[in-house]
Image (cartoon, rainbow, N blue to C red):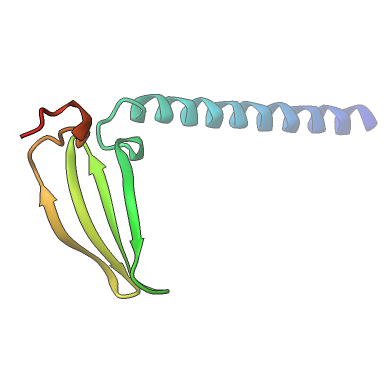
Length: 98
């Protein structure tokens, strides 16, 4: 009787290991498929954040070469400005003096 119980426990553990292995394989596959998408969070970059008061702030964000100015408040997020042209360097040291 004890061998039957041991076989049942071993079978249950092997079944659990198989299901967890399938789950890990599924998660790995999902991450691999999503890694190359252009809409991934890695494309967003916060350039600067200005705190207006304790609850409100203005955030400048770059995403896929575009620049956005957002107002953040407890009521939500509002887009103030969107520059759809590619963002150029703002480094003034390389410009010729006028």
